[in-house]
Image 1 (cartoon, rainbow, N blue to C red):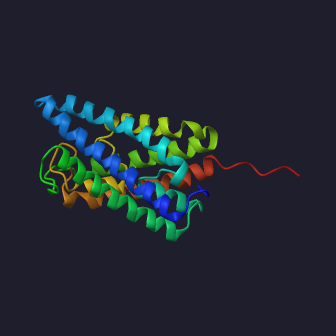
Image 2 (image 1 turned 60 degrees about the vertical axis):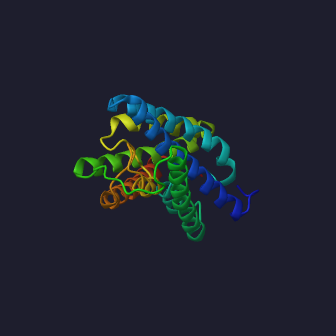
Length: 225
């Protein structure tokens, strides 16, 4: 990433997150229309598109910015001392703005109102635990792969989120920028604005816990004298 200045790193985070949300929201709208009320089929369509685009986006933008696209991932790297606070905050800003842009683009493509607050209820202990688990697993996937097989990160993340859609009660948002953007789509993939803070707190908690656990688990033993 040293070959790319901050402006280009931020642009990569913004564009990448915009494409991520355009895919999440757009595929949700498409799946909902084609599934004709079959929620399992709609979720499957949404799942496949999201997992696939994540692998692509990380391959494209990873060499530029690290392809965080996620404030929880950025926080994890800040806590590990791999990014400074000023750049971390700039990354988060770019991710949130990119997510909103992606949602608007998806709505324009499908000819629905550009920003519509969601009425999709997602709240309660089970949902919050699911988001903490989803984000813990996402950060664990990234840290483990970076340590042992860095080239596998794009595919591992895509596959993890694909699985997370189905094994978590919340369908694995695992991303505060995604959560914020999804409050403004009243479609299959949306979440009520009032429910978003609980998700975001759970996501950050999961990320922090993953940093602590995997900081210990992956710590290299001291060299013997």
